Length: 166
Image (cartoon, rainbow, N blue to C red; front, side):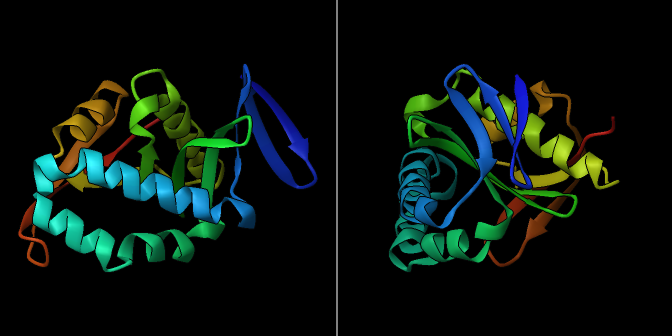
């Protein structure tokens, strides 16, 4: 993976794909990718009703807008393939377009986030839902360690907390 600077922004490039900080013009594409990914990947562990309620409430779009300053996109030919939101030591959100999963984009985004967090002197952490077995297995496969499981009373789910030592 090639690393280059554009202004004060670091861009990582692998083939035709690059990872860069999100820009204002990315917002609509990010919102659409988020809604698509949640609609396809989340019903199996959250249920159809919760997923449709979340998307229809606009909360998914609001989450993208709220964290746009902390979002990095994996992009190829102006098409966003996935994104990661990094806040301090936390990988807050990571999504890859379902049609682009299992080809390494998630691994690249996760590695990018880990490096970004470490360069600021933190140990990377993240959380997911226990029933999201695809995500749990992905993080374990990528060297993350489960540090805690805790019931989330707001959603009536168990959250799994991870960290990754260097």
